Length: 507
Image (tube, rainbow, N blue to C red; front, side, top):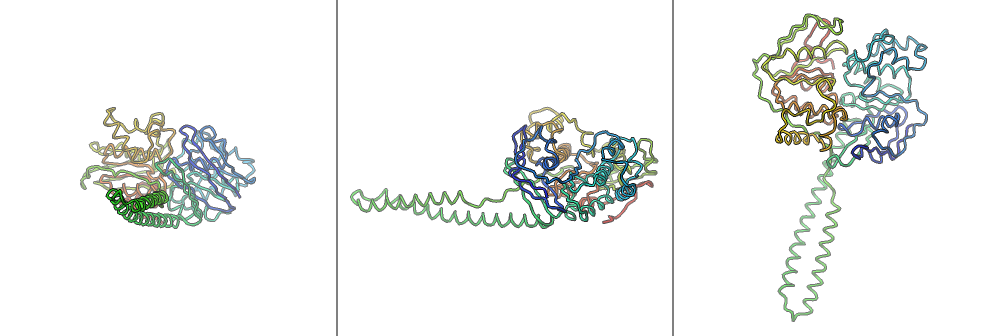
Protein backbone atom coordinates (compact mmCIF):
# COMPACT_ATOMS: atom_id res chain seq x y z
CA UNK A 1 0.00 0.00 0.00
CA UNK A 2 1.20 3.52 -0.87
CA UNK A 3 -0.32 6.38 1.12
CA UNK A 4 -0.41 9.96 -0.13
CA UNK A 5 -1.50 12.51 2.47
CA UNK A 6 -2.12 16.24 2.04
CA UNK A 7 0.17 16.45 -0.99
CA UNK A 8 0.48 19.95 -2.43
CA UNK A 9 2.52 20.65 -5.58
CA UNK A 10 3.26 24.27 -6.52
CA UNK A 11 5.03 25.45 -9.67
CA UNK A 12 7.95 27.60 -8.54
CA UNK A 13 8.12 29.77 -11.67
CA UNK A 14 4.60 31.22 -11.54
CA UNK A 15 3.51 30.10 -8.04
CA UNK A 16 0.65 28.09 -9.59
CA UNK A 17 -0.75 25.34 -7.39
CA UNK A 18 -1.08 22.15 -9.45
CA UNK A 19 -2.40 19.96 -6.65
CA UNK A 20 -3.71 20.91 -3.20
CA UNK A 21 -4.17 18.65 -0.17
CA UNK A 22 -4.27 15.55 -2.38
CA UNK A 23 -5.10 12.29 -0.60
CA UNK A 24 -4.91 8.85 -2.21
CA UNK A 25 -4.38 5.33 -0.93
CA UNK A 26 -2.98 2.94 -3.53
CA UNK A 27 -3.80 -0.64 -2.60
CA UNK A 28 -2.11 -3.83 -3.81
CA UNK A 29 -3.27 -4.82 -7.33
CA UNK A 30 -5.03 -1.47 -7.84
CA UNK A 31 -5.39 -0.34 -11.47
CA UNK A 32 -5.54 3.46 -11.33
CA UNK A 33 -5.58 5.93 -14.23
CA UNK A 34 -4.75 9.62 -13.84
CA UNK A 35 -6.57 11.85 -16.34
CA UNK A 36 -6.82 15.59 -16.88
CA UNK A 37 -6.13 18.39 -19.31
CA UNK A 38 -2.61 19.31 -20.37
CA UNK A 39 -0.42 21.07 -17.82
CA UNK A 40 -2.50 20.00 -14.80
CA UNK A 41 0.30 18.08 -13.10
CA UNK A 42 -0.36 14.45 -14.05
CA UNK A 43 3.25 13.64 -14.92
CA UNK A 44 4.47 15.74 -12.01
CA UNK A 45 2.33 13.69 -9.60
CA UNK A 46 3.69 10.43 -11.00
CA UNK A 47 7.28 11.68 -10.64
CA UNK A 48 6.57 12.82 -7.07
CA UNK A 49 5.42 9.31 -6.17
CA UNK A 50 8.47 7.72 -7.81
CA UNK A 51 11.25 10.13 -6.83
CA UNK A 52 10.68 13.70 -5.64
CA UNK A 53 14.21 14.63 -6.71
CA UNK A 54 12.98 14.56 -10.31
CA UNK A 55 10.85 17.67 -9.75
CA UNK A 56 12.37 19.67 -6.89
CA UNK A 57 14.09 22.12 -9.24
CA UNK A 58 10.75 23.44 -10.49
CA UNK A 59 8.11 22.22 -7.99
CA UNK A 60 7.61 23.02 -4.29
CA UNK A 61 6.33 19.95 -2.44
CA UNK A 62 4.51 19.58 0.86
CA UNK A 63 2.68 16.63 2.35
CA UNK A 64 3.65 12.98 2.72
CA UNK A 65 4.10 10.02 0.37
CA UNK A 66 4.57 6.79 2.32
CA UNK A 67 5.83 4.03 0.01
CA UNK A 68 6.10 1.21 2.56
CA UNK A 69 9.23 -0.27 0.93
CA UNK A 70 7.52 -1.11 -2.35
CA UNK A 71 9.75 -1.79 -5.33
CA UNK A 72 8.53 0.81 -7.83
CA UNK A 73 9.18 0.94 -11.58
CA UNK A 74 8.65 4.10 -13.60
CA UNK A 75 8.11 4.57 -17.34
CA UNK A 76 8.86 8.21 -18.18
CA UNK A 77 6.99 10.00 -20.95
CA UNK A 78 10.21 11.35 -22.46
CA UNK A 79 12.13 8.06 -22.30
CA UNK A 80 15.89 7.53 -22.86
CA UNK A 81 17.59 10.22 -24.91
CA UNK A 82 20.21 8.69 -27.19
CA UNK A 83 21.67 5.80 -25.23
CA UNK A 84 22.56 2.46 -26.78
CA UNK A 85 20.03 -0.35 -26.22
CA UNK A 86 22.55 -2.68 -24.57
CA UNK A 87 23.77 0.07 -22.24
CA UNK A 88 20.15 0.78 -21.30
CA UNK A 89 19.37 -2.84 -20.40
CA UNK A 90 22.69 -3.32 -18.60
CA UNK A 91 21.42 -0.92 -15.92
CA UNK A 92 19.10 -3.76 -14.88
CA UNK A 93 20.54 -5.63 -11.87
CA UNK A 94 22.09 -8.92 -13.05
CA UNK A 95 20.83 -8.42 -16.60
CA UNK A 96 22.93 -11.27 -17.99
CA UNK A 97 21.56 -13.60 -15.30
CA UNK A 98 17.91 -13.15 -16.32
CA UNK A 99 16.35 -16.38 -17.58
CA UNK A 100 16.38 -16.29 -21.42
CA UNK A 101 12.92 -17.91 -21.41
CA UNK A 102 11.59 -14.91 -19.49
CA UNK A 103 13.21 -12.50 -21.96
CA UNK A 104 11.87 -14.44 -24.95
CA UNK A 105 8.33 -14.54 -23.51
CA UNK A 106 8.13 -10.78 -22.97
CA UNK A 107 9.80 -10.09 -26.33
CA UNK A 108 7.19 -12.29 -27.98
CA UNK A 109 4.37 -10.45 -26.19
CA UNK A 110 5.77 -7.08 -27.29
CA UNK A 111 6.83 -8.20 -30.79
CA UNK A 112 10.49 -7.37 -30.11
CA UNK A 113 13.43 -9.23 -31.61
CA UNK A 114 15.39 -10.46 -28.52
CA UNK A 115 18.69 -9.82 -30.32
CA UNK A 116 17.94 -6.07 -30.21
CA UNK A 117 18.59 -6.08 -26.44
CA UNK A 118 22.25 -6.86 -27.01
CA UNK A 119 22.82 -4.37 -29.82
CA UNK A 120 24.61 -1.03 -29.86
CA UNK A 121 21.78 0.56 -31.79
CA UNK A 122 20.76 3.92 -30.35
CA UNK A 123 17.28 4.80 -29.12
CA UNK A 124 17.11 7.75 -31.50
CA UNK A 125 16.94 5.32 -34.46
CA UNK A 126 13.73 3.62 -33.27
CA UNK A 127 10.16 4.70 -33.94
CA UNK A 128 8.12 6.19 -31.09
CA UNK A 129 6.25 2.94 -30.54
CA UNK A 130 9.43 0.86 -30.56
CA UNK A 131 10.94 3.08 -27.85
CA UNK A 132 7.87 2.56 -25.65
CA UNK A 133 8.06 -1.21 -26.19
CA UNK A 134 11.71 -1.33 -25.10
CA UNK A 135 10.92 0.66 -21.96
CA UNK A 136 7.97 -1.61 -21.16
CA UNK A 137 10.24 -4.65 -21.61
CA UNK A 138 12.75 -3.12 -19.19
CA UNK A 139 10.06 -2.71 -16.52
CA UNK A 140 8.74 -6.23 -17.03
CA UNK A 141 12.26 -7.64 -16.58
CA UNK A 142 12.85 -5.43 -13.54
CA UNK A 143 10.02 -7.28 -11.74
CA UNK A 144 8.73 -4.35 -9.67
CA UNK A 145 5.58 -4.77 -7.61
CA UNK A 146 4.31 -1.26 -8.42
CA UNK A 147 4.42 0.25 -11.92
CA UNK A 148 4.02 3.96 -12.65
CA UNK A 149 3.44 4.39 -16.38
CA UNK A 150 3.37 7.82 -18.01
CA UNK A 151 1.56 7.51 -21.34
CA UNK A 152 2.49 3.85 -21.97
CA UNK A 153 0.07 3.66 -24.93
CA UNK A 154 1.68 6.53 -26.86
CA UNK A 155 2.58 5.46 -30.41
CA UNK A 156 2.02 1.74 -29.77
CA UNK A 157 0.61 -0.28 -32.63
CA UNK A 158 -2.81 -1.85 -32.10
CA UNK A 159 -1.42 -5.33 -31.46
CA UNK A 160 0.80 -4.07 -28.63
CA UNK A 161 -2.01 -1.89 -27.29
CA UNK A 162 -4.12 -5.02 -26.92
CA UNK A 163 -1.26 -6.73 -25.06
CA UNK A 164 -0.83 -3.71 -22.77
CA UNK A 165 -4.57 -3.64 -22.11
CA UNK A 166 -4.62 -7.32 -21.18
CA UNK A 167 -1.46 -6.94 -19.06
CA UNK A 168 -2.94 -4.11 -16.99
CA UNK A 169 -6.20 -6.02 -16.54
CA UNK A 170 -4.68 -9.33 -15.46
CA UNK A 171 -1.38 -8.42 -13.79
CA UNK A 172 -0.88 -8.99 -10.06
CA UNK A 173 1.15 -5.78 -10.01
CA UNK A 174 -0.19 -2.48 -8.72
CA UNK A 175 -0.38 -0.16 -11.75
CA UNK A 176 -0.90 3.60 -11.82
CA UNK A 177 -0.88 5.02 -15.33
CA UNK A 178 -1.52 8.20 -17.26
CA UNK A 179 -3.27 7.77 -20.59
CA UNK A 180 -5.27 9.64 -23.20
CA UNK A 181 -6.50 6.42 -24.82
CA UNK A 182 -10.19 6.23 -23.92
CA UNK A 183 -10.51 2.59 -24.95
CA UNK A 184 -7.52 1.54 -22.86
CA UNK A 185 -8.84 3.52 -19.89
CA UNK A 186 -12.34 2.07 -20.16
CA UNK A 187 -11.07 -1.50 -20.48
CA UNK A 188 -8.29 -1.39 -17.88
CA UNK A 189 -8.75 1.17 -15.11
CA UNK A 190 -10.72 0.41 -11.95
CA UNK A 191 -10.13 3.78 -10.29
CA UNK A 192 -10.20 7.20 -11.95
CA UNK A 193 -8.13 10.11 -10.57
CA UNK A 194 -9.11 13.32 -12.36
CA UNK A 195 -6.93 16.42 -11.96
CA UNK A 196 -8.55 19.73 -12.98
CA UNK A 197 -7.82 23.45 -12.93
CA UNK A 198 -11.04 25.43 -12.43
CA UNK A 199 -11.91 29.13 -12.03
CA UNK A 200 -9.93 30.02 -15.15
CA UNK A 201 -7.04 27.76 -14.17
CA UNK A 202 -6.57 29.55 -10.85
CA UNK A 203 -7.65 26.74 -8.51
CA UNK A 204 -6.84 23.01 -8.56
CA UNK A 205 -9.46 20.34 -7.93
CA UNK A 206 -9.23 16.57 -7.94
CA UNK A 207 -11.70 13.70 -7.96
CA UNK A 208 -11.15 10.05 -7.05
CA UNK A 209 -13.77 7.61 -8.36
CA UNK A 210 -13.84 3.87 -7.76
CA UNK A 211 -15.30 2.38 -10.90
CA UNK A 212 -15.06 2.47 -14.69
CA UNK A 213 -14.28 5.54 -16.77
CA UNK A 214 -17.67 5.41 -18.49
CA UNK A 215 -19.46 5.33 -15.15
CA UNK A 216 -17.30 8.18 -13.88
CA UNK A 217 -18.17 10.39 -16.86
CA UNK A 218 -21.88 9.57 -16.53
CA UNK A 219 -21.86 10.19 -12.77
CA UNK A 220 -19.98 13.44 -13.26
CA UNK A 221 -22.54 14.65 -15.81
CA UNK A 222 -25.44 13.67 -13.51
CA UNK A 223 -23.85 15.49 -10.60
CA UNK A 224 -23.32 18.62 -12.72
CA UNK A 225 -26.91 18.44 -13.98
CA UNK A 226 -28.36 18.06 -10.48
CA UNK A 227 -26.13 20.82 -9.11
CA UNK A 228 -27.17 23.23 -11.87
CA UNK A 229 -30.83 22.29 -11.42
CA UNK A 230 -30.62 23.03 -7.68
CA UNK A 231 -28.67 26.25 -8.31
CA UNK A 232 -31.32 27.44 -10.77
CA UNK A 233 -34.19 26.58 -8.40
CA UNK A 234 -32.54 28.39 -5.48
CA UNK A 235 -32.02 31.51 -7.60
CA UNK A 236 -35.58 31.35 -8.86
CA UNK A 237 -36.88 31.19 -5.27
CA UNK A 238 -34.54 33.97 -4.17
CA UNK A 239 -35.71 36.18 -7.04
CA UNK A 240 -39.32 35.74 -5.84
CA UNK A 241 -38.31 36.63 -2.27
CA UNK A 242 -36.40 39.70 -3.48
CA UNK A 243 -39.39 40.80 -5.51
CA UNK A 244 -41.64 40.49 -2.44
CA UNK A 245 -39.07 42.33 -0.35
CA UNK A 246 -38.92 45.16 -2.93
CA UNK A 247 -42.71 45.57 -2.81
CA UNK A 248 -42.68 45.66 1.01
CA UNK A 249 -39.77 48.10 1.10
CA UNK A 250 -41.37 50.47 -1.41
CA UNK A 251 -44.69 50.40 0.44
CA UNK A 252 -43.14 51.03 3.89
CA UNK A 253 -40.84 53.71 2.49
CA UNK A 254 -43.81 55.43 0.84
CA UNK A 255 -45.81 55.32 4.08
CA UNK A 256 -42.87 56.76 6.00
CA UNK A 257 -42.58 59.64 3.55
CA UNK A 258 -46.29 60.44 3.60
CA UNK A 259 -47.32 59.88 7.26
CA UNK A 260 -48.22 62.95 9.23
CA UNK A 261 -45.63 64.13 11.71
CA UNK A 262 -48.44 64.43 14.21
CA UNK A 263 -48.95 60.67 14.15
CA UNK A 264 -46.00 59.80 16.42
CA UNK A 265 -47.26 56.30 17.25
CA UNK A 266 -47.84 55.48 13.59
CA UNK A 267 -44.38 56.81 12.72
CA UNK A 268 -42.83 54.66 15.44
CA UNK A 269 -44.55 51.53 14.06
CA UNK A 270 -43.46 52.32 10.51
CA UNK A 271 -39.83 52.81 11.59
CA UNK A 272 -39.98 49.49 13.39
CA UNK A 273 -41.42 47.92 10.24
CA UNK A 274 -38.66 49.47 8.13
CA UNK A 275 -36.09 48.03 10.56
CA UNK A 276 -37.66 44.59 10.11
CA UNK A 277 -37.68 45.08 6.33
CA UNK A 278 -33.96 45.89 6.31
CA UNK A 279 -33.32 42.81 8.47
CA UNK A 280 -35.14 40.80 5.79
CA UNK A 281 -32.79 42.30 3.19
CA UNK A 282 -29.75 41.23 5.23
CA UNK A 283 -31.15 37.68 5.44
CA UNK A 284 -31.66 37.67 1.67
CA UNK A 285 -28.09 38.90 1.11
CA UNK A 286 -26.81 36.11 3.34
CA UNK A 287 -28.96 33.63 1.44
CA UNK A 288 -27.45 34.90 -1.82
CA UNK A 289 -23.95 34.24 -0.47
CA UNK A 290 -24.94 30.66 0.42
CA UNK A 291 -26.51 29.79 -2.94
CA UNK A 292 -25.41 26.53 -4.52
CA UNK A 293 -22.96 27.56 -7.26
CA UNK A 294 -23.43 26.49 -10.85
CA UNK A 295 -20.94 23.75 -11.65
CA UNK A 296 -17.44 24.70 -12.70
CA UNK A 297 -15.50 22.35 -14.93
CA UNK A 298 -12.43 22.53 -17.10
CA UNK A 299 -13.68 22.43 -20.67
CA UNK A 300 -11.58 21.72 -23.72
CA UNK A 301 -12.64 24.62 -25.91
CA UNK A 302 -11.41 24.49 -29.49
CA UNK A 303 -12.37 26.53 -32.55
CA UNK A 304 -13.48 24.70 -35.70
CA UNK A 305 -11.10 24.33 -38.64
CA UNK A 306 -12.59 26.86 -41.06
CA UNK A 307 -11.33 26.15 -44.60
CA UNK A 308 -12.93 26.22 -48.05
CA UNK A 309 -14.37 22.90 -49.21
CA UNK A 310 -12.03 20.85 -51.38
CA UNK A 311 -13.82 19.74 -54.61
CA UNK A 312 -14.57 16.01 -54.81
CA UNK A 313 -12.58 15.60 -58.06
CA UNK A 314 -9.52 17.56 -56.88
CA UNK A 315 -6.38 15.42 -56.92
CA UNK A 316 -4.72 15.56 -53.52
CA UNK A 317 -2.06 12.91 -53.93
CA UNK A 318 -0.79 10.36 -56.43
CA UNK A 319 1.90 8.45 -54.59
CA UNK A 320 4.21 5.72 -55.90
CA UNK A 321 7.12 4.58 -53.75
CA UNK A 322 8.90 1.52 -55.22
CA UNK A 323 11.00 1.01 -52.07
CA UNK A 324 10.29 2.43 -48.61
CA UNK A 325 13.58 2.40 -46.71
CA UNK A 326 14.93 3.68 -43.38
CA UNK A 327 18.70 3.79 -42.82
CA UNK A 328 19.20 1.34 -45.70
CA UNK A 329 16.65 -1.14 -44.34
CA UNK A 330 13.85 -2.09 -46.74
CA UNK A 331 10.47 -1.77 -44.98
CA UNK A 332 7.97 -1.94 -47.82
CA UNK A 333 7.79 -2.21 -51.60
CA UNK A 334 5.40 -0.85 -54.19
CA UNK A 335 3.63 1.64 -51.90
CA UNK A 336 0.80 3.36 -53.82
CA UNK A 337 -1.86 5.80 -52.66
CA UNK A 338 -4.25 8.04 -54.59
CA UNK A 339 -6.41 10.59 -52.80
CA UNK A 340 -9.09 12.83 -54.33
CA UNK A 341 -11.28 15.47 -52.72
CA UNK A 342 -11.95 15.91 -48.99
CA UNK A 343 -11.18 12.32 -48.09
CA UNK A 344 -10.03 11.32 -44.62
CA UNK A 345 -7.38 8.58 -44.84
CA UNK A 346 -5.87 6.74 -41.87
CA UNK A 347 -2.77 4.52 -41.99
CA UNK A 348 -2.16 1.82 -39.40
CA UNK A 349 0.59 -0.79 -39.08
CA UNK A 350 3.06 -2.35 -36.71
CA UNK A 351 5.64 -0.22 -34.94
CA UNK A 352 8.70 0.28 -37.11
CA UNK A 353 6.95 -0.55 -40.39
CA UNK A 354 7.66 2.94 -41.79
CA UNK A 355 4.40 4.87 -41.23
CA UNK A 356 6.08 8.08 -40.06
CA UNK A 357 8.66 7.85 -42.85
CA UNK A 358 5.81 7.44 -45.35
CA UNK A 359 4.01 10.52 -43.97
CA UNK A 360 7.13 12.61 -44.57
CA UNK A 361 7.21 11.42 -48.20
CA UNK A 362 3.48 12.16 -48.58
CA UNK A 363 4.01 15.65 -47.20
CA UNK A 364 6.43 16.41 -50.05
CA UNK A 365 4.19 14.99 -52.79
CA UNK A 366 0.80 16.59 -52.07
CA UNK A 367 -0.49 18.55 -55.07
CA UNK A 368 1.53 21.76 -55.19
CA UNK A 369 -1.32 24.30 -55.31
CA UNK A 370 -2.89 23.04 -52.06
CA UNK A 371 -2.02 24.57 -48.70
CA UNK A 372 -0.72 21.69 -46.56
CA UNK A 373 -0.19 21.48 -42.82
CA UNK A 374 2.04 18.85 -41.20
CA UNK A 375 1.82 17.76 -37.54
CA UNK A 376 4.79 15.48 -36.75
CA UNK A 377 4.95 12.82 -34.08
CA UNK A 378 7.98 14.57 -32.61
CA UNK A 379 6.65 18.11 -32.21
CA UNK A 380 10.05 19.78 -32.18
CA UNK A 381 10.58 18.71 -35.80
CA UNK A 382 8.32 21.68 -36.59
CA UNK A 383 8.97 23.85 -33.54
CA UNK A 384 11.82 25.91 -32.14
CA UNK A 385 11.76 24.85 -28.50
CA UNK A 386 13.01 28.25 -27.35
CA UNK A 387 10.32 30.34 -29.03
CA UNK A 388 6.96 31.09 -27.39
CA UNK A 389 3.45 30.07 -28.55
CA UNK A 390 2.71 33.42 -30.18
CA UNK A 391 5.94 33.33 -32.19
CA UNK A 392 5.18 29.75 -33.27
CA UNK A 393 1.81 30.73 -34.75
CA UNK A 394 2.43 34.23 -36.14
CA UNK A 395 3.13 35.06 -39.77
CA UNK A 396 3.67 38.82 -39.51
CA UNK A 397 4.43 41.02 -36.54
CA UNK A 398 1.44 43.36 -36.68
CA UNK A 399 -0.45 44.46 -33.59
CA UNK A 400 -3.71 43.12 -35.05
CA UNK A 401 -2.17 39.68 -35.62
CA UNK A 402 -0.73 39.62 -32.11
CA UNK A 403 -4.16 40.42 -30.62
CA UNK A 404 -5.91 37.79 -32.75
CA UNK A 405 -3.41 35.07 -31.81
CA UNK A 406 -3.82 35.88 -28.12
CA UNK A 407 -7.59 35.47 -28.60
CA UNK A 408 -7.06 32.08 -30.26
CA UNK A 409 -4.75 30.96 -27.46
CA UNK A 410 -7.24 32.16 -24.87
CA UNK A 411 -9.90 30.00 -26.52
CA UNK A 412 -7.86 26.90 -25.65
CA UNK A 413 -7.32 28.02 -22.05
CA UNK A 414 -3.78 29.39 -22.35
CA UNK A 415 -3.13 31.88 -19.56
CA UNK A 416 -1.36 35.16 -20.37
CA UNK A 417 1.94 34.02 -18.88
CA UNK A 418 1.76 30.65 -20.70
CA UNK A 419 1.55 32.49 -24.02
CA UNK A 420 5.09 33.71 -23.35
CA UNK A 421 6.60 30.50 -21.95
CA UNK A 422 9.24 28.77 -24.11
CA UNK A 423 7.70 25.84 -25.97
CA UNK A 424 10.06 23.43 -24.20
CA UNK A 425 8.29 24.23 -20.90
CA UNK A 426 4.84 23.28 -22.21
CA UNK A 427 3.19 19.89 -21.82
CA UNK A 428 2.65 17.56 -24.77
CA UNK A 429 -1.05 18.42 -24.78
CA UNK A 430 -0.37 22.15 -24.88
CA UNK A 431 1.99 21.67 -27.83
CA UNK A 432 -0.64 19.55 -29.60
CA UNK A 433 -3.22 22.31 -29.10
CA UNK A 434 -0.79 24.83 -30.58
CA UNK A 435 -0.60 22.75 -33.75
CA UNK A 436 -4.39 22.80 -34.00
CA UNK A 437 -4.46 26.57 -33.51
CA UNK A 438 -1.82 26.94 -36.25
CA UNK A 439 -3.99 24.75 -38.53
CA UNK A 440 -6.91 27.09 -37.88
CA UNK A 441 -4.83 30.20 -38.44
CA UNK A 442 -3.31 28.99 -41.70
CA UNK A 443 -6.61 27.65 -43.15
CA UNK A 444 -4.86 24.59 -44.57
CA UNK A 445 -6.67 22.46 -47.17
CA UNK A 446 -4.72 19.24 -46.48
CA UNK A 447 -3.77 17.98 -43.03
CA UNK A 448 -1.01 15.40 -42.64
CA UNK A 449 -1.11 14.29 -39.01
CA UNK A 450 1.09 11.81 -37.15
CA UNK A 451 -0.85 10.54 -34.10
CA UNK A 452 -2.93 13.73 -33.71
CA UNK A 453 -4.83 12.68 -30.56
CA UNK A 454 -1.92 11.17 -28.63
CA UNK A 455 -1.56 14.04 -26.14
CA UNK A 456 -5.16 15.10 -25.65
CA UNK A 457 -7.01 14.15 -22.49
CA UNK A 458 -9.96 11.73 -22.82
CA UNK A 459 -12.40 14.59 -22.24
CA UNK A 460 -10.68 16.69 -24.94
CA UNK A 461 -10.21 13.90 -27.48
CA UNK A 462 -13.92 13.80 -28.34
CA UNK A 463 -13.75 17.52 -29.20
CA UNK A 464 -10.74 16.92 -31.47
CA UNK A 465 -12.49 14.03 -33.20
CA UNK A 466 -15.54 16.19 -33.88
CA UNK A 467 -13.37 18.98 -35.31
CA UNK A 468 -11.61 16.60 -37.69
CA UNK A 469 -14.86 14.85 -38.68
CA UNK A 470 -16.32 18.22 -39.69
CA UNK A 471 -13.17 19.42 -41.49
CA UNK A 472 -13.88 20.19 -45.16
CA UNK A 473 -10.40 19.48 -46.47
CA UNK A 474 -8.41 16.25 -46.89
CA UNK A 475 -6.75 14.41 -44.00
CA UNK A 476 -3.99 11.81 -44.22
CA UNK A 477 -3.09 10.54 -40.78
CA UNK A 478 -1.31 7.83 -38.86
CA UNK A 479 -3.19 6.78 -35.74
CA UNK A 480 -3.56 3.90 -33.31
CA UNK A 481 -6.36 5.60 -31.38
CA UNK A 482 -9.21 3.11 -31.66
CA UNK A 483 -12.00 5.63 -31.03
CA UNK A 484 -10.45 7.98 -33.58
CA UNK A 485 -10.20 5.19 -36.16
CA UNK A 486 -13.84 4.27 -35.67
CA UNK A 487 -15.16 7.83 -35.95
CA UNK A 488 -12.97 9.96 -38.25
CA UNK A 489 -11.45 8.28 -41.34
CA UNK A 490 -13.39 7.32 -44.46
CA UNK A 491 -10.77 4.73 -45.44
CA UNK A 492 -8.16 2.85 -43.39
CA UNK A 493 -5.01 1.36 -44.93
CA UNK A 494 -2.55 -1.02 -43.30
CA UNK A 495 1.13 -0.59 -44.20
CA UNK A 496 3.24 -3.75 -44.34
CA UNK A 497 6.14 -5.05 -46.43
CA UNK A 498 3.86 -5.37 -49.47
CA UNK A 499 2.64 -1.78 -49.41
CA UNK A 500 -0.74 -0.27 -48.46
CA UNK A 501 -3.91 -2.36 -48.32
CA UNK A 502 -7.38 -1.14 -47.47
CA UNK A 503 -8.67 -2.85 -44.32
CA UNK A 504 -11.60 -2.93 -41.94
CA UNK A 505 -10.90 -2.43 -38.26
CA UNK A 506 -9.80 -5.58 -36.40
CA UNK A 507 -11.53 -4.51 -33.17
